[in-house]
Image 1 (cartoon, rainbow, N blue to C red):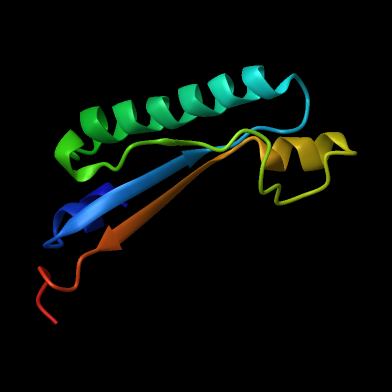
Image 2: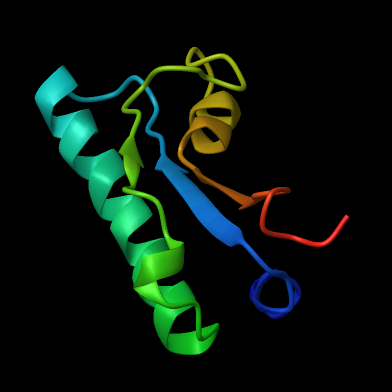
Length: 94
């Protein structure tokens, strides 16, 4: 993903951290932020993505679950980080 992104003109990377429903709201917000920040650090160090190309990380907590929080498998799926590469078509050649 990092290799593909850096070859684009006008790209930015959006990173959002998520948690399952275990723990309190404040704890989940902090945990989801730490997850997002770890991915940013990895992309910067291993993927050579400059921080100027990274949007402010999103701490989404337990919002937007992709699976049920009623099972261990579902909770595992909800503990994630979403990464999207966005391209400004005004800067990037069509």
